[in-house]
Length: 306
Ligand SMILES: Cc1cc2nc3c(=O)[nH]c(=O)nc-3n(C[C@H](O)[C@H](O)[C@H](O)COP(=O)(O)OP(=O)(O)OC[C@H]3O[C@@H](n4cnc5c(N)ncnc54)[C@H](O)[C@@H]3O)c2cc1C
Image (cartoon, rainbow, N blue to C red; front, top):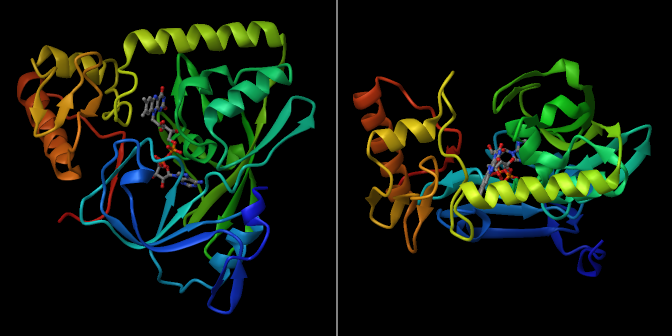
């Protein structure tokens, strides 16, 4: 644990908290698009116990927004009326339980899960290496790449409810699909247990290298974006539909469709969430007009418009 998190920092409704509690936090620095308004309240717990204490005293009707690494989120410019709970890096535990089972807390970066699993001589989680989110985000989104999908390897998860109580579920209690996961309402992931195959670390490392190389060739690197904006419609690719509608490179202010991958929108510098959302709606309308296909967003859009 970070030394600064060892001592209680803040008193909140009569309890002592170890994490970082802030009012009026700009979401710009917490999202990979580098846009978004101010959240009324932002809490970064030091660990699961700390989070439980915080939630146990929150008003029943407080609106909650869970944040991993913000790599799949568009926060509107008017910000968030409610509390943002940031799992990274506080929920950062990762432990090998034996028999191919790796327990990972929600705030661990997915790339770290991939590296740790191969170092442990486990195979199957390499695809997480290039996904720039948290493990909690991967659980919430059923993140996947190059044929791999998060929930294919999940044995069990731990969730927290509004009162700070932890519940353990087996993966079979969830309904899981392409970038979608349905489970208990009003509960959020604090950890998951991966069930992986045993195998060669050397081969696992080689696979990570290959997958990262492929990503570098097909995606814009080093520019502010949120990955694929739209879900692929059945039997097709959102990028193909956007590109063949002639929309590659199209901009709304400083928000532009990537020249490298048409399903990515880049903040080329100083874009607002409004510009990004306007471009999203424009792409949807144009793809509908040209191809007769309604694109659905994969990125989650939250918060209030200005
Ligand atoms: C360059 C780039 C490449 C990408 N490539 C891929 C890819 O190959 N495959 C892929 O699937 N995705 C990809 N993504 C999208 C994104 O990285 C994934 O969806 C990732 O899993 C999101 O994790 P996050 O921690 O950033 O989630 P966030 O963006 O912080 O949150 C996403 C959603 O998950 C919810 N959430 C987050 N944590 C929790 C929790 N603990 N409990 C409950 N709900 C939670 C949030 O409320 C929100 O609704 C890419 C993004 C970028 C920027």
